[in-house]
Image 1: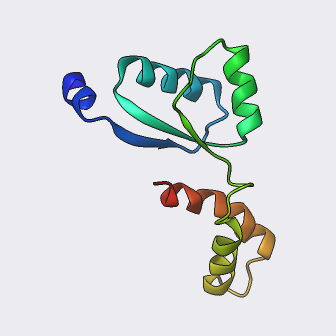
Image 2: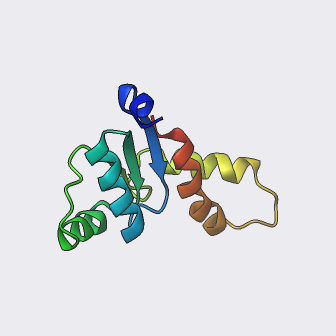
Length: 104
């Protein structure tokens, strides 16, 4: 199965991109050439933890929901589709999750 994954690595999105265990797992995936990790989180935090943990995550794509140009569009769509009882701040928090599905 590993050889099959190495032959055609797939992109894998990790929504908890700032988590130490996730960073170590991504490092292993890169080392073994099994997958192409995409980390969702604050880019500066991820870089700092990469250095702290002495990992090489070169080639990992980082998507920062707070900085994404798609963020406001998703917030607007959530606001349009959401129920009247939900606040704009709740929709803003949910936009990070929605961005995971837009990573390509």
